[in-house]
Length: 233
Image (cartoon, rainbow, N blue to C red; front, side, top):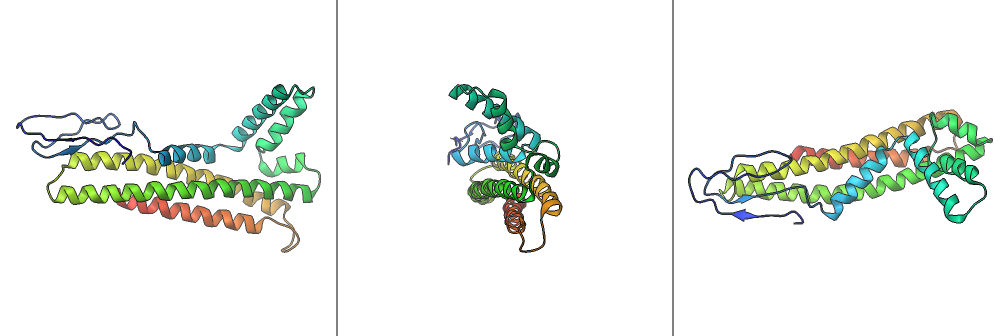
């Protein structure tokens, strides 16, 4: 386990040990080993989960602002004479400010160009969701395994309830990151659904149906992972 685990024998009656878990101080039972679990040292998977959750939760406007900053940075790094053009390109690539559909229609003159851009955007989101799902599964499996082990240890008298509660607090924090990622993916899916209705033609004549279906399926898988972890905490 990447978390710091400390087993301490508490022998004196009346001895109270402070366990710092998200600013909580649990009561520790004397004579029973206690495992101190903090979220100070995140695993690589947890760091990745937090990163991807925050990325998926970025609004379209935030994405546009980040893109504009990237465009400016590229312009400065390359010594471009077209600074503001590069900023504009960064804004268009980074996100679709305001209404996604309205921005597509404003920045791309033809329906074919709009569809191409929407397809590229949804595929990028699908890639993000796929990578997020993978790390969600890794975190979920470890959390459930550790919680079940602690419950068994508690039942056998090998640990106390403070240890289990500490572990579960960390698991809930990871669950919150998962739920944030899901909300972000759902928000993007709603934007793509609007784009589908506004610019897609008849079936088979060019649309983003397949890409949108892939995203919806990925979101469903993300929900299932989070729900299983939720059922165990």
